Amino acid sequence: MNIGDVIIYGKHGICKVTGLQDMCMDEVMRPYYVLKPVYHTGATVYVSALKDSRKTEIRSLLSTDEIFSLVKKMSGKNFIWNKDNRKRKELYSQILADGNHSELIKMIKTLHSHKQELKNINKNNKLQISDEDFLKDAEKTLCEEFAYVLKINREEVIPFIYEQSF
Image (cartoon, rainbow, N blue to C red; front, side, top):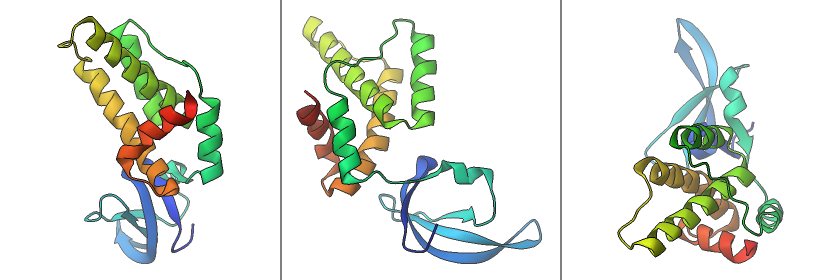
């Protein structure tokens, strides 16, 4: 990781590496990367520059070509729905934790489809709160990265996915 790099860091999302700073933790001076979240400009995150288990949460952003390729592969109805609420919550929690782009797209498409089915039955029907929360978290994770890389607004990402994958 170098100063100026733009990376994804766990739940903090897209961050720019803005510096390297020595900090005293546990009475020991160590170097830390200074990360500035792109979409949460008031925040600053510090990550040890030394070997650290949290570094596994750091990854590079997808390229434009990788995004287009991924979305094209996701065409059709690749849904991941489980009628058992507990099992569905476990599955969706794991998908969010893993951050696998394909699975996130499937989850988003599944929840959007289920939401539409509920509305078709009765316009007052809504997703369960937990499903709505999973949808928001999955969209946030995916939309921030796709919007940043594709240089579009976050609100344009879901329509982009649907346009490209159907």
